[in-house]
Amino acid sequence: MHNLFRAIGIAGATTALVACASIDQSNGGMPDYSAAPSYGTVRLSAGFEPDPRVISLQSGGGIPATNVSSACSGYIAAAPDVRLDYQAGEYPLILSVASSSDTTLVVNGPDGSWYCDDDGGVNGLNPSLRFNSPRSGQYDIWVGTYGSGALQAARLHISEVESQ
Image (cartoon, rainbow, N blue to C red; front, side, top):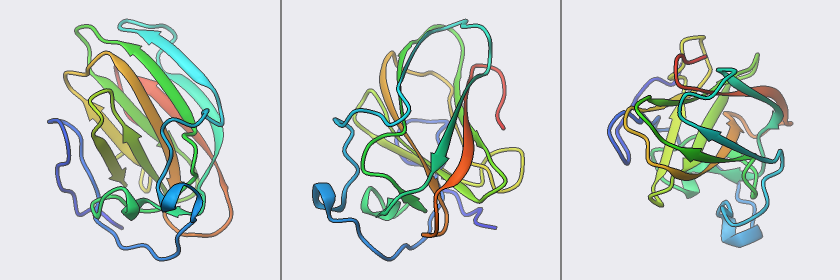
């Protein structure tokens, strides 16, 4: 559906370009990567098991992801959904979402850059970001919904092997 991709940040991350409308005025209409994550913090080191690590959550929010970058799409919450503290090694890091709804993905990486995707996963309308040479550090992760409607059930997959 929305498969126009453009690179943003490091190689291996893809983005989708989409326009969004209403603005949540908390934190000036921007997501707050310093806020406590709604679904907790996950600490993983390269070679982690089980792979994938799966976190169930409710996707969406009131902030247009285009506030982060015009290359981002969907609506996200003010606070990150999940914070990943990752110790990198020789493997790629793959963040993807499985949902029956049209979801998007927004990540603030350890380098301070924003990474976004819409529909880059292998299963239809699911997003995926692949960091081929990931950095160690904090990844703040938002799972959005493409539309501005109600929150939707979703599962965030953290893997070094495959995308959803």
